[in-house]
Length: 284
Image (cartoon, rainbow, N blue to C red; front, side):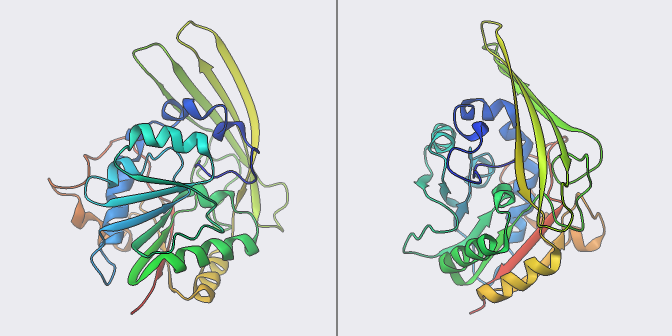
């Protein structure tokens, strides 16, 4: 899940429920993945110090990357940006749509985390990749982390397309608690999107509970479509299986170099890791 909605005001999760986001998807769950992504950044032709995070949501990836990188966070949901500003006050925040935003400058790296899931047609995916290319310095790198591709999607899975029912959540000492369940399925295998049905159980400090259900439409493009569109945008395209999907040598090469004592944060034993990874290199 991520911070960009398919259309303005479409999903409550990123509007009036945004304040629950740190409990629904706790920031510590992103620690291990952030270390992995930092290692991917280190493979760029130029040193990566400034990163543009498109579709940054509540800033739960940025909170781990910001220790060593200057982060600029862009999201179309003002409510999610407010959550991120509280968590990441030292980062620059800009309200904008990843398909159309233009900041008039370039960055060493561009990150589009799973907010790209809310792009459900090739025309819009092309616009996102063009935005990334426009903001990527020659020699820089753009990294895309979709939860689903046509090849990895499995009906009934949680985040990343795995089998079984998805779920999670957390609580705070103040008494607020949140949990969710997720079911994914594909209404029409002939198109480029799948559906995730969520059930959020939100318990306030006074003990009152609300249950919110909503269906989200998520992109599931083929690997070939990703590579083709990256090339058309001007990138040197690469596809990589993240370590969640592949524990072989290719998955482990490179990213571990940044996980020593000075790494962004400690590893989380129950943290999430990317199943799908697409890389665009803007060669000099």
